[in-house]
Amino acid sequence: ALSEATIKMHVKSICKKLDANNRTHAVINARDMGLL
Image (cartoon, rainbow, N blue to C red; front, side, top):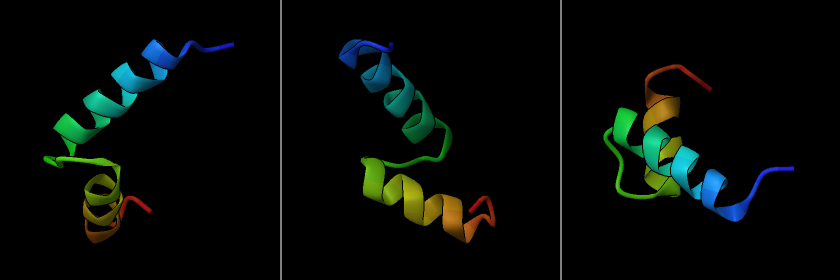
């Protein structure tokens, strides 16, 4: 199982890579980039 801290770290890393401020912005950016 993954800890809450691990999930938060991964989300933070993903947001940084997608130049996003939050999860919603990350999803929008990923969609716009054709990743989803």
